[in-house]
Length: 294
Image (cartoon, rainbow, N blue to C red; front, side):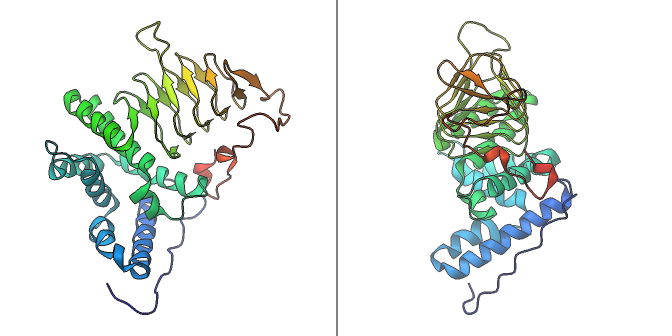
């Protein structure tokens, strides 16, 4: 890689009224490549890695497919096979690409520890597990279920994130730290949701069929929270860390405790400083891009 004076000029963001589409995807990819060039110049030990994972690729879907293939490969699931699988999915389905872009922006904007888009792409296992799940979900919808389940197993082994291929997940998702996250088969997660580590969206074990939680848009679920059964968590709600939720939670309401009790909400908007979850501000972040406001 060239040495000498650092030449890094961050690309300008898309206008505030832009939607997640080709222009937005192109901007994020340009940003990722600029960040990778900067990091390669400042840290030569990473130059080869950054070239092979980002700089040698012509698009975000190719870079992401290459990286996921290398992360999830095994002696029986070869990296070349996985690369082709991921690339075919991301290239043929624009909704997967737009979701990946929204997830990158969610991490960069809502997680203060995320220093760059390239950092999220390369190192955030929550982001990587979510993108791999989206492909597994596509395979599940195509009735390619043995392959979907094999991919699901590898995701759980490598990233310690267990999301059933049938689970439906929106975009703008932040799996913060992600270790120990479990999402059941009939769970649904809306858009712009933040979920911390060791969260379970599971069943009660008493019913079959549609038996897992439905998470609305803009919800924050704190670390170690457990939500069981076919319950609804309303838009903008917060689930405090360590809570066990067995009931519906109305929109813009905080649920805390074991079993969870409801605090605040639209009718009682008062602050409760001693309640876990009230201080979690992932969903209160106001982005300059209106599509990502939670």
